[in-house]
Length: 272
Image 1: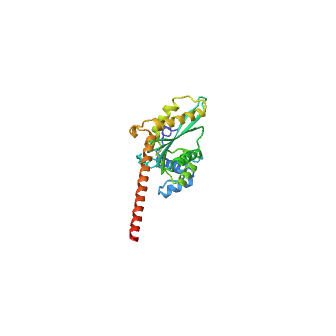
Image 2 (image 1 turned 60 degrees about the horizontal axis):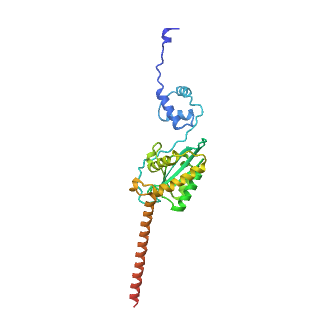
Image 3 (image 1 turned 60 degrees about the vertical axis):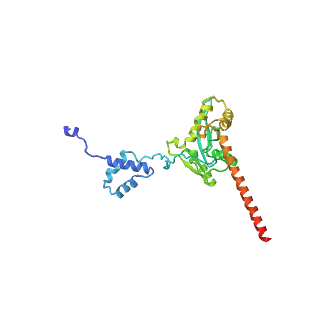
């Protein structure tokens, strides 16, 4: 063998073709070589078919690839201070385990205006159907919110939850993937719940978690001074909004009654 043959190195550079095929494979994972090569020619890239096929096979793109479902692009929306209760809710999941090692989850729901804990529901499994049931119980007591802020968890992307929100006229506000602070209200509530309950006790049964969660929720809403509420409790803030709403309705009713009385007096005077 000649020394020149032994030390010969090819001068072909296939990097451009490799990048293009990799781009197609990521964007269209279910397509094959014919579709990829057709796209290449439609982009006016004059590469020999045999060359592209050789690189395609070397990259082992002919093997069936598992397609990963991608989350749609989310629009960054800053947290806005809500001016009225029951208009915007936030939800998130937490994870923990019993002393036996069996895992459990906790669904936390809160009102963005009053910072009330509306639900702290623990269970071994909480699919979208259970999420809907928890929200139905909240709505039966407080009314339907205008929006709910959640992350991109499978329970919140499921058809059961999305269709339920559409039927109720609720707008879903999804946070961007990997940006938990876009749902900062519920993240702060999660921290308090973990410090006071999940990290403070060792649980033997799910019933123990539920009892302590209910006790914590009542204490948090009625006795926990919240910094963002000027050291007031969430329940006190909610009652203040409720009294204000009742006062406005009473004043409006009084004005309406007074206007009706004046009209009646005017009509009576005209008849006389």
